[in-house]
Length: 582
Ligand code: SAH
Ligand code: SF4
Ligand code: F3S
Image 1 (tube, rainbow, N blue to C red):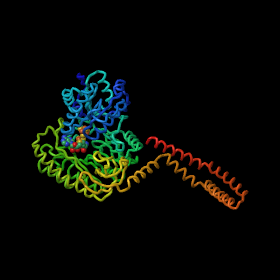
Image 2: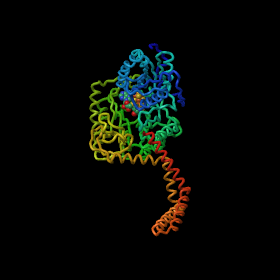
Image 3: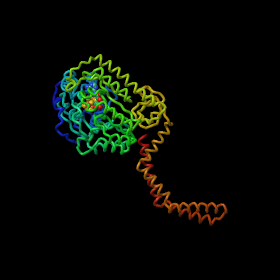
Image 4: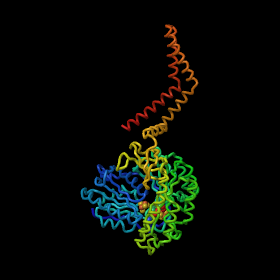
């Protein structure tokens, strides 16, 4: 197309604004006619970089595209429309995006109506959209994190105006509900509870790319989770850049602990949450995590640095001592709780001594897992303006030393798992070997084991036999088919009609009138047998008549009729299940 229409471009100073209040919008999904016609017979592809917030945005965009009639493509080259969902958190995340855009040139050359969109956090940075538009003439649409729900209208506008369109909004951000969604996993789901971030750690771009911290209303979250439980989801992860802040913006005492507890009570088998900022991790949260067995004992607690001066410069609002105190509290209350973290190496002017504090903190905490990053200056953040005297070589060398110390902790935890049994939510067969399944234990550790792929989506017991440090090898504790039969039995018993059937059965068994009839029927049967043996024809005829009349009474007994009716409901439900399976 070539012609560009810049509707709006990002402005970091507007993105920093935290003055206006967020608006709550309930979207009505309207598919423009032109988009509906374009979607017919066409397939979509979405490539996502970055964190779970982007994964959830991918699901929402897939929801919009499928509402319009696009079908999912099996691979990139089959796609007639592709969206690249970008991350801006570090430079290397950004570099990957350019390679990804390049991949779709082939689609453009093959199919002149091919539509390529680029969106996500990186688009919220100044100058990026213009740069992409000038370097890649086959990019047709650029939008940001605040207007994902305009996707179909932007496609419509692009098709109607025959222009490549850029619309990136910079404002603190709204809360949009009633979004469509095509979830990527059938058993594990992400649920946003807060958007954005107000912490403004000095190195971090997220508060600018995702806007102000804003909480979704409790009822909207609970409704989404309730539906997931009904649909058979086994695991929910509550998402937010800092979930601990949930509800603070309502100013009515709503807290993360309260929403966590309410979701746990909905009966989801596994509940996780991320991420918790160490600064506002409350005692109340610890109590709730400890109280509910379905809240996984696994806390991601990013420390970033073990040195107080660096923490201060990062704007993290806690000290090394406060962090270690929190770790102690967690472990005292829940000794089995896994603790994982994020660490940044080479923050501007970090000295060797300051780095050694990070190493000693890792030695002390012994993390179950840690994500380690070399500091990457992000334009527009305060840290990016600091003059840095640490060389790249020093940063890399520190990074390698940190990896070693982190690994020692991970090895220690992994070895303690050997010989123990863990409940694992089965993700499915491995790509390399279809006979090998994998899944995560409560503590977040990946375990591989042999089993049938029918176990996918089930929670099974696996005994750990060997450590590969970052993943484990185990074996199923119970015969897999017995586990499946048990699960099936449990889910059938949870069906309303099955519950009704068993209640009617109990009522029928305990009804005194029905019991008397059963006794009388048995007595009549005995009399028929005696009369037949002794050739007492008259006696036999009488007993047979009594038997028929008693049986009629029995079959018209209200408790019996209830039982037959509820049994019929169960039969119909099973037939429906069989129909769906066939
Ligand atoms: N809200 C989450 C993290 C979001 S970003 C939290 O506060 O924990 C994930 C991780 O990326 C951060 O924890 C941090 O360790 C890392 N990170 C963020 N900005 C970075 C930067 N400029 N350079 C290197 N790592 C960074
Ligand atoms: Fe970034 Fe800090 Fe917010 Fe996490 S808490 S998203 S690191 S600003
Ligand atoms: Fe990246 Fe945006 Fe997430 S910058 S880490 S995708 S919030």
